[in-house]
Amino acid sequence: MKITKFKGDITPEIASSFRNSIAIDTEATGLQIPERDKLSLIQICDDKENVFIIQPNKDNFKAPNLVSILENDKILKIGHFLRFDKNALEYFLKCKITNIFDTKIASKIVRTYTDSHGLKNLVQEFCNKSLDKRQGSSDWNKDLDELTEKQLEYAANDVVYLHKIKFELEKMLIREKRMDIFNSCLAFLDTRVELDQNGFKFDIFEH
Image (cartoon, rainbow, N blue to C red; front, side, top):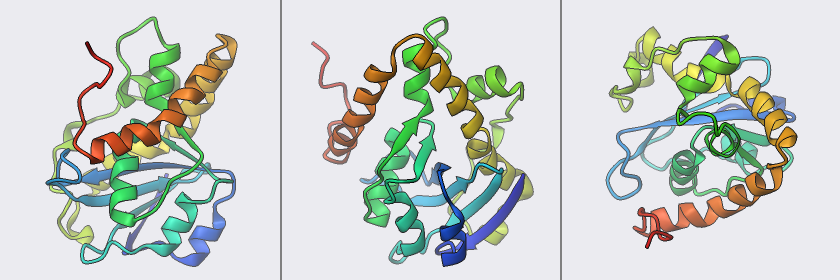
C-alpha cells in the first residue's frame, strides 16, 4: 500500500489515471453533517492499492479534479456506508456522485448468516486481516502534515480492502439472486441522502 497526500485537490494527472473503479471514504469532524460537522479528509484508492488522502480547502471546498472522478459514470465508486460519505461529498464539494457500490448494503442483503456488517467484519472475513479501529476517534481537522502515520494508515485502511470485498460480495449477490434488490437499494440512496440533508434522519417507513 502506497499513501500519497494532497491538500485541496488531486492533480489532473492523478485524476486521469483512474479507469474502471475507485474506493472512497471520508473523515469528518463528527457525524452531524451538514448541520454541525464538516468534511475533513477524503480517501480514494485505485485497484492497485495506491491510496490518495486529500484534505479539502476548508474555505471553499473546491476540488474540480476530484469532482470530475466522482461524477464520471464510467468509474465505479466503492464505499462502505455511502449514505454518510455521499452526503458529505455531495454537500461540501457540490457534486453528484454516480455509479456506486455500497459494501455495507450488499453485506446486509446477502450476509444474512450474521448481524456483523461493519468494515472490520468484512475485512476479517474476506481479506483475513484484523483492522485496528482505535484511531477512528481522531481530530481529523488538523493540518494534513500534522496527522500521525497511524492516523494516515487508519484512513487508508478504510479504502484499501474495498475492491476485494466488493468482488466477494458481488459473487454472493449473484449466487443468491439478490442483485436486483441490491441495485434498487442503491437507486434509493439518492433519496435517502436527500432526506438526511433535510433533517429526516429517522426511518420514515417505521410505524
